[in-house]
Length: 239
Image (cartoon, rainbow, N blue to C red; front, side, top):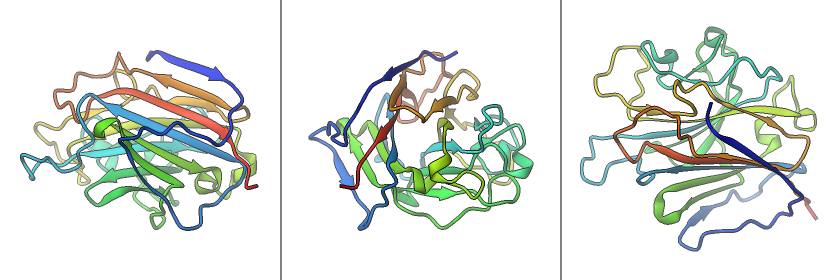
């Protein structure tokens, strides 16, 4: 298992911001009282398009499951057919069970966008993208941080006020073979040695979860190699 640490504490809305980072904000962010602060750090830099070889693409995802069942996923898609979507799967991906929303950061989503998963197969049907409350690129470009309001990850079955737990995984890859074909040289990283050690988050209390993914797979590309992640549940006030 990945080393996962938790800290339960009372937190306000003030966040420590690295001075070298940049941030993006939507014009009218929703506020429901609960938010997630999601952080992912790689050994190299967050670099969707390689500066030396523009033909090299990288994709960074945070997969979120708000179905109330901590056994369904989300998991990294490791082998062909790569989950049917190129990057994520679950114990019932055929019916899009195991992930209800995700953040995607890549060349097509340069500010990081949040997508909701609609009924269908293999998580291919999604809502239109929306920006998180906040997107930051920190620590000289090695760290991504997103702030997401619970209203943005709510579902019809589990509205924002009823969210008591979430399952979250951090996933990176250099190829999205949607057709399921084998891709030589495809690399990926996620939580745990098989990409299935997603974190079960209790959202009823303000709490910080974090780990170093020391038992993750061997990743030769430092810009895909996850070396730190954190998930913070925080209560905020609109006043």
